[in-house]
Length: 392
Ligand code: SF4
Figure 1 (cartoon, rainbow, N blue to C red):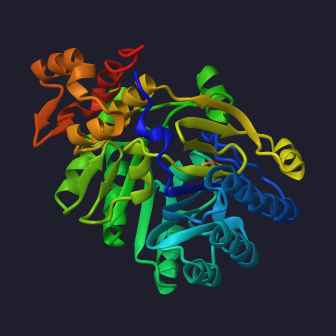
Figure 2: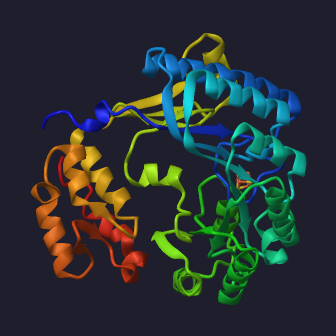
């Protein structure tokens, strides 16, 4: 098959990884470190240099327009005002933020004062995402979070005071000993705050975390799959009565409040990424940066990209990705966009799989879109698997 559009499409999004936290939550396997301020300062200096390296690699000195920027972690709000200003200056040196650029920063409840939120607003950040997870104090302690439930409201109030209107809260489902009432209570608390975007994720036990060890030792009492599905359904039903749209399997938003940066991932569009352990997707190649801070800094000191692995995404893999990622969205995959992106009609490639899923009612085709009906979200992974390995 011929080349695909993704090999030439210039990204309009940037992900920046800030790998620092006050302490490690018991379930977390993200690239993050508990370090002192000197280490953070050094990291920011290297990050700024990596932005230059990325721009030189892909944009040939031209300042590319960014529609979305996302700072994830870690806890990006551990950076100081000066460090934020330094990074913002670097982004604006090598890129142009569009006038409507969505700039999201992840934050931990209770860890940030009004003046830092004001700095973030001043440099152009216009969306915050707080890891609330649960509003049950016992559960917060059980998963190793440092904040109290009451910190969430305080943080949201402070952020609003500084001018933030777009705020997401992350919630977790399937935590040890969590009940359906806990999950619904969390949603009630979020709704009382007038939040317009909620991400609700199921707990995953990741290898190498304290939770994985405790599970092996039989010390972790997880609610089990059925109860977790019931929590998800309870959360979903509650939000649907409150003008929220369930626009992605794990995400809910009121009208116009969808996370535009995450839509880039789900639509299988390209994005730049910088920072230790960050993953990017540029010109048909997916790259992953090294996960060690020392190695990351060594590479950059030698003026080299800190890349651990880089893989060319074949046209076949790209088509499978478009299906698996796009079907996470309520609107599903646009058949027109698929053809535009891959140069071939979706049914020509996946006709057999689509027909079989349509016949079973696991897929719906309407208005030029293929989508999974919401009642089958709980088996979405099984549906995605139908599209793996079809083209190879
Ligand atoms: S705050 Fe987030 S990134 Fe940091 S340890 Fe906890 S879950 Fe991981």
